[in-house]
Length: 310
View 1 (cartoon, one colour):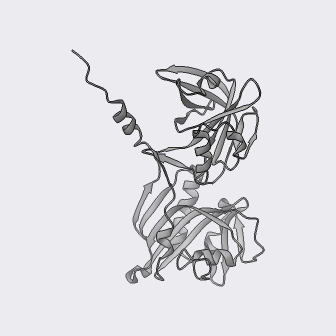
View 2 (cartoon, rainbow, N blue to C red):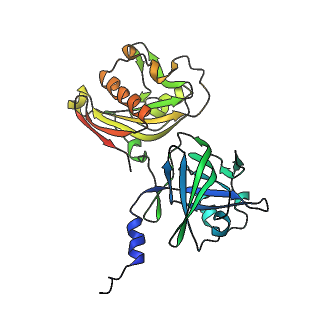
View 3 (cartoon, rainbow, N blue to C red):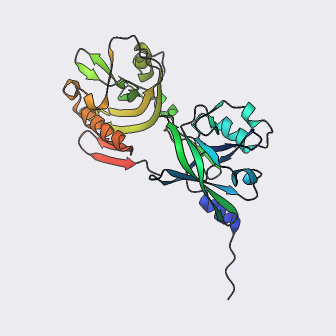
């Protein structure tokens, strides 16, 4: 009995339904020059020992180099690094002259500004059909809070919520942010206690009542990464909704005396004036510790946390 026809093109499209990140895989060739390519076939393998893998087509021009390399690095690109992805997906002869990079432990190039990077010694090369599986033992790594660049169905995707829609939010909404800095969580002192940075809408920065305006007033240059919670408060009968992002402060500590940075394990819960925000912030601390975030949708007393896991 003959086997049914296997449609390779349809199989590729089916695989495209899986959302991945975008990486640049690099090494140093025997002649001392760097070599690299864009890949989304990257995953973790083991924590003990720390292993990761990337798949390389045997037809790829980089295959001969990477199948024999003793070391390599993987840079997980950040959302603003689409041009870097494009450079390493091209046939350009001077890829490394078009991007900013540096070397770490093994000497393999690592992209500046990446969401994360993994510097590896080659652990094993496995033959797998028309690809090889390059398994690396991680000897050095870095990571940031930058939003990663996503890829699905042959196109880049944005993992963060579009902020354009919230820019036009009306006066009945409150838009706030849970912002971390290297010194801790950003809280603002008010006459009524501590609170997270909050405004009546997201944009524009020229509106002192907007979240961007509040951040500018206090000298906070912030990057908003993901939506964290959407819930109605006691004022919900009038249509008020609270919307909170999570993100990070990217500038130095501001001079504004109203801003305090506190470690997550030292949050002054009794000084926070809004019980619903306290509940939300306690969830943030828990999920931040577990590195497993979700989005809360509901009201101040009941709702659902929707996982962001892919």
